Length: 278
Length: 357
Image (cartoon, rainbow over the protein chains, first blue to last red):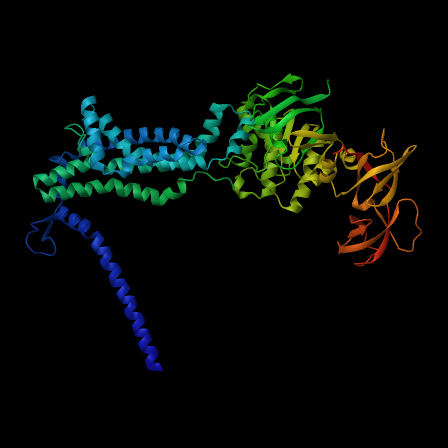
């Protein structure tokens, strides 16, 4: 009897160990490329079959900043990001209001069309964008690249803000009207504060998408509008793995910052619904 | 005309083929609490929303204090309104919610604070200034709603089923509170509800609506005692209806044949022989007698079909005459069991002439 119980416990322990091993392997498997790049960005003389780099250095980062012109590239990326966020959120507010508040025929079809840029292969869509932008001479301008980004950022903004507007209580707006607020005051004192969480969520979504966007940038950028993902990709072509790794690591920093802010301050999934009444 | 505060003049509102307000004409006096009462879909809410300006009537005009406000936008109508779902501003504190109408009217901060404090005292919510609506109970939220509606002394207070979202006990409490506040401020109030008990308890006058039309307007007593139609009688209180026809008219008394029995009731004006009538009896207006009690005018034999004990009253279903049933409520002191033979007397019977057909 005691033997049986001991056997059972051993089996249980074995199972637990197995589960942990598997989970850990999976985590390592997912993290491996990232760890690889992280190590490479600070390693020196890491050739052959060595497990770890023999020497650590920050030289590659200096190279990345000086030769790779990262500050300039970062500036481009941020300017494009800000324009994309502003345009997408503005579109999101108007379209979200229409989708969330109005009963209109063909709402679903319209929504499907708006989501289309996310559904078809990015390169297909990007080719079309590039073709149009060459004609309009929008290629290699901040506005041009940002507008290309809007095509993927705006659908998120619209989705998020539609949900926010749907959650807005009609009666609360009516109450504001009865209280004496005209349309403008109603918007600034009641509607705007109530949809603010949705606007923030949509801005976060839009910015991360613009910041990470690669395909659309690749087909619309020029010498003056190189963004971080494109710069990193180009550096790979030049063959300097260490410097490229350093760039890639630098690129992660703002993403981590945003992630930290989101985790601390707000949960995007909660922001989407906006303020709820009771 | 000077004592009329609100007037609906021939107001019509249609939604496609549905007529929500069918030539509604109603005058509400200054300082009066008028209830719009009716089942859902009777047009009472549409009427209220025409008053707030949220809906524009297709035809007719609406006046407040002698001024035609049919085309005045909502925010210029100087109304106060209490909503069924409270409709407080969730992102504002109680202080800011109540102060909102004052802020919109650009009152100074000190005056605003003073009047908010006054309004909160009126609804007994002092000390909750910095709470957010979600931190308050339903009753407290509705008091905030009331304070917000009253804080700038509007000419008219509108209440849209303000108690429907509260539980039964609180509802009764708030009912008296609203009545007291409205009476104390001598404000004209329009109260929309589907709850007849609420309407009877609160109102100076009740307007009963049915399918977009006014059925009857009167004090709660008039409406309960002298309903003008079967709809009103059915909607307010419990009622029995019996169909019959006039057999003979004898001065101011007429003999009506109902289910094989003869009843003597006050004659209808210009009632003739053969006229079909609808008799109407409240369950507590039927006297229950022992089967051996002496008979007389309007005394009939009946049998208890079902007896239900309700605490202070007994609720009976009786059968009498030819297949007639009657609901009777009487004192629980004297009880009759199921199947017991009884005698019933009708001391008072009201009736309407029915249009033939």
